[in-house]
Image 1 (cartoon, rainbow, N blue to C red):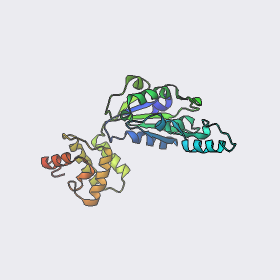
Image 2 (image 1 turned 60 degrees about the horizontal axis):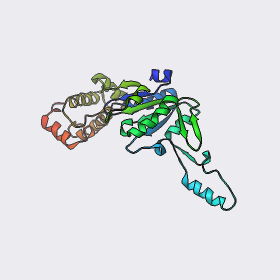
Image 3 (image 1 turned 30 degrees about the vertical axis):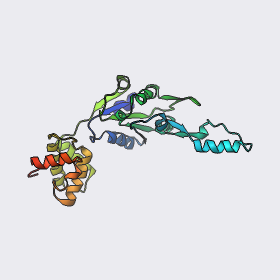
Image 4 (image 1 turned 90 degrees about the vertical axis):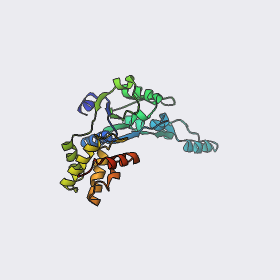
Length: 248
């Protein structure tokens, strides 16, 4: 994060789902007093979702007004709807731009990002080139559902976030959930550590650890609250059949 701020270079965070990649951007924005702007990527995302689109309803009203003698430039900034990327470029205040789960987007959108990540500028045909007055801190996250292209990676600093060690995860639970008893925090974190050594479809992330700690406080039993940590039926059945949590 320090290098991303100092070098004004995007930071690409990879890791398993639930290890806290998105939380890095939130924490950085909070620590620096910056505005957090989040672009959640998904299959089929395009320029209109990410950068801008035209307000067709207002343009239609302007056309009707023009019929009554009031003319308007339909492709002026007055009719521009700014999406997260354009908001980040035009912001006058410090901004942390989170491009979340970039691996869910397609190759075409990834290619579109190259100009923005290289020069912090974008081209809008009707308005021309828009450049950032001050560069936002850019954090991209990926769960590695597909491999990202080298051209994108070359523009970024890189960091892999792994699951935290046991004592570190206990510290996270105690910090985020100060109302949870120390014994409950340790029981849950030790149980999560054992689950991550088990052959499961979906390993629990830190978010599941936090939810499980709260659930354990509510019901007092790890097995009864297992659905807070595991979200696949086969995983729940495999864990219960294996006795991984016996005595926990």
